[in-house]
Length: 456
Image 1 (tube, one colour):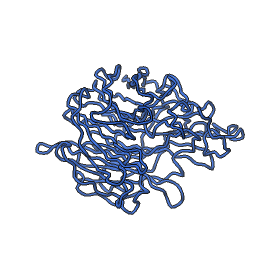
Image 2 (cartoon, helix red, strand yellow; image 1 turned 90 degrees about the horizontal axis):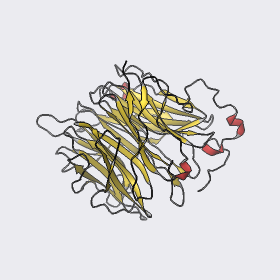
Image 3 (cartoon, one colour; image 1 turned 135 degrees about the vertical axis):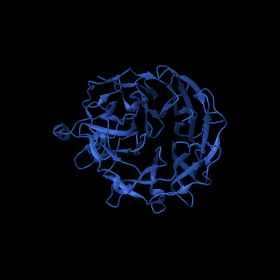
Image 4 (cartoon, one colour; image 1 turned 180 degrees about the vertical axis):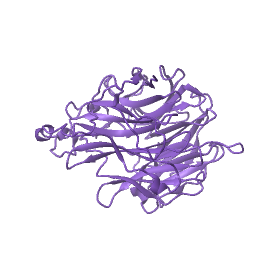
């Protein structure tokens, strides 16, 4: 196991000098380093999802079946020797137990990954991932599998976006609502690199995923500088795609485009937020991250979360911004609010979900500088009655029943890789299901929990 980089720069998380540690906790903002259980929230244990022959598992995503909230489908990257594949796991009891479904059908591990999963309103599950060669140069397409039985089995894959000479990266799948005459539209946002048309694109299907229209570029001016796209569809024909690009000042811009006509047309790109950096350097641990995005199932609320890190102060922040939807989209986004901040803890890999009562949940890795160990925290807001109202969050809820050492993540020879994102979904009945990569067993495995909301 390698050691963390011990350089003095505050951007290197294990290199924080004693002089910096002495003034930690001097701020009055809520610190992610001191999670407490809210009086009305509780976590029903930690459940290990993966317990099979794979050497390690990272980058989990999860979705809940709207026709059966006890049916959850999780997908993650899995290591097979020096190769990487994608495997699925299904639960039919609300996440208490999980059944391994193995590698996605027809998938031969190479450098596959970046899974994304969603259910449509008919209870059909769709899984997408990048199927790539290690190269060099690296090539990769995005393929899709459909399951009609909650993840027990999958149909043969279809190609959503072909990378050609390049690589399709970081796909994000979201599904709109169907009308009486049309199927629910499927949208797949992704980054395309190594081609003549690099950048963030979106592909759309209007026939239940059987075919997809050619991908269309969303920010040609940014080109390959636009990365880590995420997509969220509302029930009113709205679609939002968010991504990050470098800012002229040397920081990071969170940008977005929106559509209010089922992806027929899109706005010009606009800036939602700017941060100096999303995270400090982590030495020989890799846990890079992008933004997170969610749209309320009932419409009227879209949320984006991102982490920010200030090298000058050592302050890490978890930020959230909200929008009422596609009407005047650039002006409708709120100023980013600080959900949590502190210089004792680094916030990493945010995820966001919206419950049916418009409670917003934001999960995050909380990396303690004092112990060099991680927890998963969940911040849950009071119901947001209008998108113009700033969400009110109580103290963070500690999801992990024990912290873990990220230095025990899979050793690729150049880094200990914890993955680039984790997962979070909301289920009916004020229930959230976070899912994450965890090393408490001594190697990277996937864990989940069920977080309930009590009512008086």
